[in-house]
Image (cartoon, rainbow, N blue to C red; front, side, top):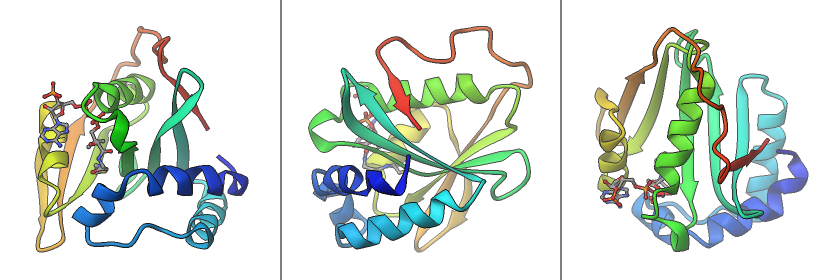
Length: 163
Ligand SMILES: CC(C)(COP(=O)(O)OP(=O)(O)OC[C@H]1O[C@@H](n2cnc3c(N)ncnc32)[C@H](O)[C@@H]1OP(=O)(O)O)[C@@H](O)C(=O)NCCC(=O)NCCS
């Protein structure tokens, strides 16, 4: 993703108001998103992707590598547009990511805002375990990955991530 993708990302945020209500944050404005993408593009440890289904940007995956420790990856945000939620897409994105990272990454972590019980259920359903209690703001979930690279295809045919 490039700073020029800010408009598309802001559109995705604006189509997901429930998430921002849950975390009691305003929907980021275009200027905030532009700044965020600029800052991410100058950080070699950040990786931002749109989740594409049938050519449409229906989600966003924001990762930070080697954070909090070398060999870890933190999911800063996985967001699936509200109209597309509960269709198995988030789970597909994470399974695809785990396959892509197997053998290269020790552990995937995700921070969940305390009020976001749906997200906690999502991570637990994917086998992530409660790792760090950072109440009152966040809970951290984590999953250790195998040490062997996966032999399976790194991308499912239905899912195409645009980096
Ligand atoms: C959390 C999120 C990424 C899940 O994506 P999704 O595509 O809707 O999830 P899936 O359809 O793949 O769900 C897989 C399973 O996770 C669980 N799950 C997902 N959302 C849930 C919710 N709101 N409440 C309870 N369980 C939930 C269910 O067990 C679900 O399986 P089921 O639908 O067969 O019951 C999505 O709801 C989202 O973008 N939320 C806003 C942003 C956010 O909170 N991100 C997570 C913090 S990084």
